[in-house]
Length: 196
Image 1 (cartoon, rainbow, N blue to C red):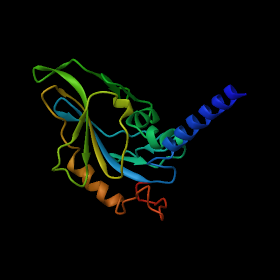
Image 2 (cartoon, rainbow, N blue to C red):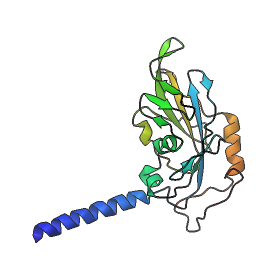
Image 3 (cartoon, one colour):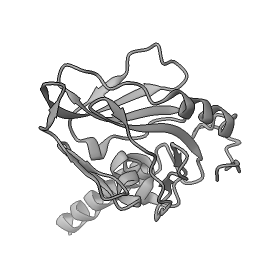
Image 4 (tube, rainbow, N blue to C red):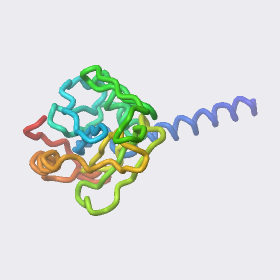
């Protein structure tokens, strides 16, 4: 009987923890916008144009990430860069990424005389003067942490930091997202924008 209580208690704790993680920001009902760009060696790539979206993280071919989880698979800890890539049929890992065109870009090719390395830079779209967070591991697991972030997925030499996304994408973010939505807002409600 004691063993049964211990097992049931453990399962209850595990369920509560996973449920809490799934309801951490962004939550179902949130509607965030962030900017993304893809940069290879010295050239920005075109926008993702496929709009498939099984779980609530997608783009409308506008250079923006629309993060409004439909379910737990795209909320909290599962609101990730990997979820965005898989939604349009691409992928990202620590050495390569696949775009919606089917183009696969893999580390190691010559980039200005040095081998290319995959990096993701996370910027604050409202404070681009602040140095970005540069990530090189668990890139599929890079989480979306707040409204109005900016990301550059880049293949660059080890000694080079990814540039910020293009100015026009950041400008477009201001036109579609005039209200910042926060998960802890008691009046949080989804918005309708021209791009949605």
